[in-house]
Length: 160
Image (cartoon, rainbow, N blue to C red; front, side, top):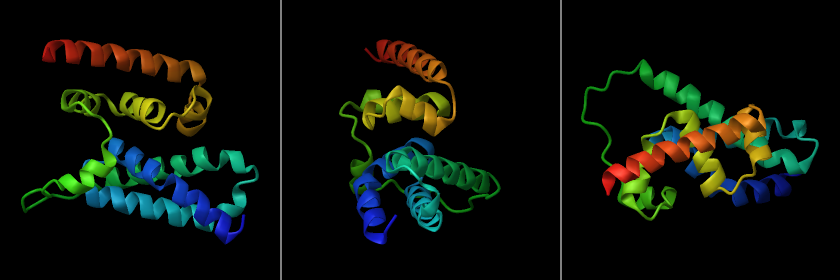
């Protein structure tokens, strides 16, 4: 893969990477670190992608691994100052859910369900692609989506 091909593919996927990282990491600075680290790792290992159709699931999987690494690292850090204030302008770029109650309900889902919902409904990934990214069978993806829809239905019913 040439440098220009890589740049074009990453540029097309940048917003997707930020939205996926937002599903896994609460702090903006951690999201930015995860995306940048995953792009750097993908660049270093770009020769491993034999079929260009697998680039998107491959780089999203790298991002998920980076998000988990940052999450593990942050568990060992004790914050002494006030937590980072939310940045409404930056958060508006990562959040594409129109209804605040729905957004809060999605953020309240367990990580495996939240990530599946974000990949399917926000990023338009197919069941097979999600299966490849998360390294689980297609049936598990369907089950997670069904469970997540039930949780969201119950949570939003309580809102109304």
